[in-house]
Image (spheres, rainbow over the protein chains, first blue to last red):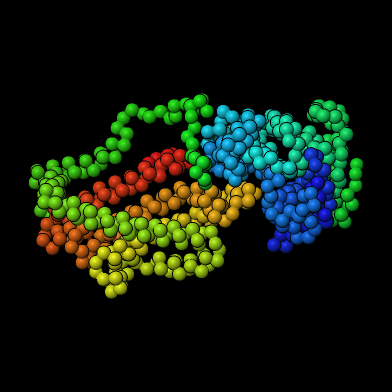
Amino acid sequence: MLTVENLSKRYPNGLLALSGIELRVRPGEILGVVGGSGCGKSTLLRVLSGLEPPTAGRVTLNGTDIASPREEIGFVFQEPRLMPWLSIRDNVAFGIRHLPKTEQTARVDEALQRVGLADFARCWPRELSGGMAQRAALARALVGRPSVLLLDEPFSALDALTRYDLQDHLLELWSYERPTMVLVTHDIEEALVLSDRVVVMQPGPGRIQTVATPALPRPRERTDPLFEDWKHRLLGELSRSFRDHRRGEEAFPAAAI
Amino acid sequence: MTATERLYEPTADALPSLAGGPRRRPGLGRAVGLIVPAVLALGWEAAVATGWGDGRLLPPPSRVLATLYALYASGDLVTHVLATLWRVGAGFLCGVLAGTLLGALTGYLTVARRLFDPTLQALRSIPSIAWVPLFILWFGIFETSKVILIAVGVFFPIYLALSGAIMDVDRKLVEVGRMFRLSGPQLVWRVLLPATLPSYVLALRAGLGLGWMFVVAAEFMGASEGLGFLLVDGQMTGNPATILAAILGFAVLGKITDGLLAAASRPLLRWQDGFKTEA
């Protein structure tokens, strides 16, 4: 269980990025986090990963505090961030160099197979398209078999078709080991296609406005009227969060919709 | 980067669209670089032969080559070349070691940068030739002072380039290293070092070029052998052909050593996604 208790984060420049965040993410759950720019989505993910320390509150994984990056936590960044001097194979193996060579090879082969890049193992990152590079980044994050996978707008830089393809692909990858996933996105459709629950965040400082549990059957179809209905509900919540922010109103307590 | 993280080249079967790589155009290729010196040499030779040029102060290429051959036949050329090569090699090695160590330290550790960089930047602005009298007093007139003077020349471009390159490494790649829990030395070895390699290689080549410049100054301070000595000897004996032979020696050796350095580093930089890849 990934637990966030009364989390606040203030940057050294004085900016309060997060305030009073409370979350419980169940093992194997996919949690979507949506919100506009500057509402602290990425900061939340960075604190969950251990890359940023919280200013107040606690983040724990199965009862243990997350104070720094841990083996059980994988991270997929907005950009692939592949090491340009390493082949795709070596990039995927980057985080498992401590394992015996035979296990490394087996795991990397399996990961490349799963993301459909087995034929591109010896290529340089510069030779891959944006979608392929992001798949390599996914393989790199998953090859260590993390129990928690954090994704920070992983498909936002891609075209719509590639994005849809990778969303399906992500669900397929999740189905193998079923890690807990926290997906930050500004795309409501993406959050609805992938997530079991969707957290809507409010800016200034970043807080949770609503946690929604879309009652949608899987696999989710974007053309499903029910899907459209949920999309409009979440859009309404997002609009409300910005309205509230502009009016400078007090934070709304988190409520289920 | 561990031993198993080899730098691969894409293969034709791995990426069919790249099969065969860029095609070379037929033509002179690298030999085209010889055209300008050849035309200049032939032009000067013709000018002297037809009486248009003064062959006494600027001897034609044939006379310079004859001087070089005479030096070679007597065994002096090899002695001079080896002496200069040894000085440049030793000075380059010392300069590279010191520049790499301090460059890496000041680039990686803020406290080291604050401690050493102001002093090193101040020392950098001193003309290196100004050190000569002091080096002679401290280390004598023989090899040590010469090697140290060359090392000073090599040190600064490497120090500056490496320190700056480390500070400029993409923060996002460093963050990937942090996410995979790399220790400080692992981060240096697996992320910072390969990321700075292109700048480092350029700095090595610039440092080597300066090494060749400084060896002349070093050999002016009382050497009895070396191409720099040959320059002084040519001046003292009023023999411009000897001076030109020494200058030609510097040019050829400088080009060869730079070419070797570039060739040695090329396999390590194949991953670069530059506008043009050129040796």
